[in-house]
Length: 400
Image 1 (tube, helix red, strand yellow):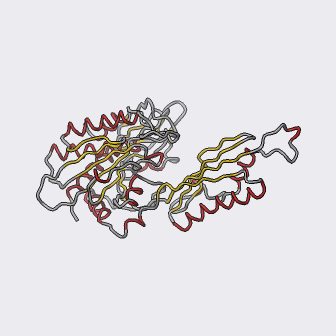
Image 2 (image 1 turned 135 degrees about the horizontal axis):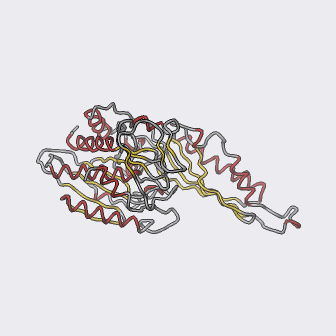
């Protein structure tokens, strides 16, 4: 199978993770794809293949006595929770002509709204039927890695040790919570989890989650004077005190944001869930302090009914690379060999690689040729996926 054929197979597996679950992995259905990948890795002839706590590990032992640096490749199996990943029904648009793509009677992709379509004119595209996400994030990455490994074995391409891993729960920030670095003995690795295939990114957000819980006082409104504390109204008041321009819809590049993920409440109690994102450490700490300051100010007025629980999720990987650019330069050389000009941009998100880099395994991010992730407008370019397979192969062949 080609990378595209592999992707079409993988998207038939429903692998959404579940932030509310405490299981490892968070959903058992992720293990169905994990077991399929174990089977496929063994079939193509990989070594030391196993699944552990939801993560699939597989090795290609070196087939040369030359001193080649052991490297790794990582992708994640789970899909995002914004829209269903069940019963995905992809279709292929051959030689996309640059016009509006009708997904179904209700939903269409207008190139003016989705500028990424301008990068794939003339390509064959895999799109959704408009009812689910596609799952290219990150099953396109899995397909590219698997296709590259299959070609290495089939064509006996010379290589040093290669270790691959497919993780669960990346979308809920737990992708490498149980990642076994002893089972991944490489000098550095790459997550294949972006979109544009000319990119090698090594700067991510600093990230935290803030859960704001509000305990109100519910009482009959007829007797509420100076006694009722309406938690739902306090939730609105809390949200209104955050900077109104520092939201995802109004920021770009290195600009951070406060993102209200969910809001629920009634008179008696309410809850707000935010994610905080900033590339700069000082600004990131200021975001956290802003949440705490609002809590303190409101509690002075409303008798300590508001609690803010902040959990740091991952850090900007750049600060943990300590200037070691070997992985980045090796990827850039492979991208150039593919006839592209490599770029490195600040990622407005995070990857498993951010947390692995913090743990000592430098792990920049590569693209997949899939775009518009986390929604019904997701699509993948078959030709770009093929070029990404070649880039991975040239990373394997290359040596600093």
